[in-house]
Amino acid sequence: MAESFTLEMKQKLLSMRQEILERMSESNSEFKSIATSMGIQDSIDSAADDIAIKKMEAVNKHEADRLRAIENALERIHTGKYGMCLRCGKKIPEERLRALPYAVLCLSCKNAEEGVGRR
Image (cartoon, rainbow, N blue to C red):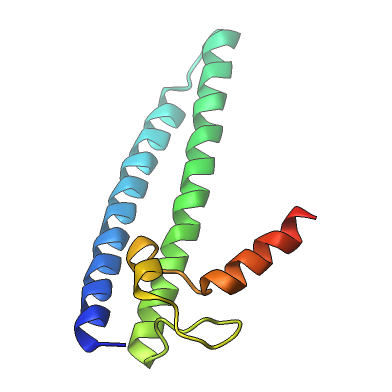
């Protein structure tokens, strides 16, 4: 894999990581705001706050999973293993990495994995 491509992907991953951290920080501020404002409320307000909290928790879980994948991709860049399929060891096409810079499987292995999951 060309060093220029790897550097491009590293910058993209770092940018994605920064965006996620900023969103998670904003979400935590919203979460704290809701938590501190939960004084005496009627049941409708309380239910709406519960829904908002659950939604933020789900978003944060998704963001945390993406952040972990990005961190793992950055580690693979550092160790020289970026762009190699973790299942079969073949190169992951640059087009796939441009679309999903933290991809760990080539399309063949990903399709096989999804096929098994659908059964």
